[in-house]
Length: 447
Image (cartoon, one colour):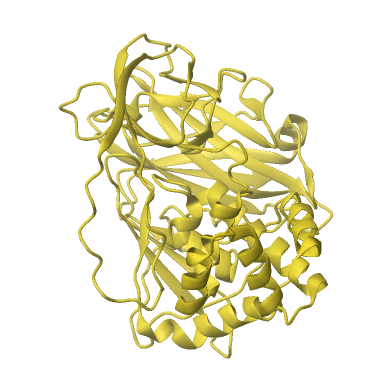
């Protein structure tokens, strides 16, 4: 057991590797949805004018040229005339991250604003100069910032941003729904980093991290804050078509007030909710996790994500154990037939995917617990993503003699976040899901 103790320490300190692509199946005979689609790094369809979505973060490319491998976006109403757009891009060449100069010298950016996903009417369009003034370094990412004039009398819109390589013409598209009439607190305020002065493009921070909530102008407002200490349930099986029980009510653990544009420290883990008016239905949700998140390191937290590759008996044994660390060591060694090297590889691969799921998909609960997180952990990143108004479809290329496997996620906004999605479940996923799980249980998946 001492060997496995050392094995865990070494493995869980390893860097996070992006998930490789594995697979599943859409219910046979069902008509496929018809949203626009775009594979990162591929030419866009010439027949579609609808916006396309970014895939989950793809594995780093091995090609010798620079590629935009990820795009995230958000907007903030700046004033009565403009909205400010933030496009967070990941520019990579292999495992090297690009600079401001790399992006500005190799790519062009333009956008078009449509009334909705089904309309071809252009409300606005423009080219965005990619310069040192419009691009900010944000860790490994490059944040492009620009303003869009609000179309006259428009309440909502869809902004389609298009990055184009100046040399080869390859395009990367990303769509962003916008509310030009600010009706929610999150339309005007966002979580910012006091160190960089840039908005955080995620829904989580760690304990004792200094953060601030602010708008573009730096307005001072009093917000009501609520803390909930609740352990949300992880995603259920993709084949579980039984209707989910009604959501449990959350008991408020504590309340306090904060002032926007003033740094605050949140010293306790939990789900936080900020409101401008306690009668409002929607506010800003924020997960505060332990200091190592999105990585998991505590034995009591490491044991939970193996739910997706375990039997009920195995989960019961792990949960009943008085010594979780030893039980988890024994679990992995047993699955790998006592081979510590194979166990090390499986542990590294699995928890790398858990970490990446936390980074990409955390909403009001940790990313590994979401439906997207579950699919990503077991199957890896999709080959491409399709998006329509309130739906995403993850498309995987041929797996297990199936030409194409689709997973449909419907958007389920709530008072905390707007980007939470739930999987449409089918029993027909069994022939795809079980072999993928078995590959994890035998150590066949290595990254």
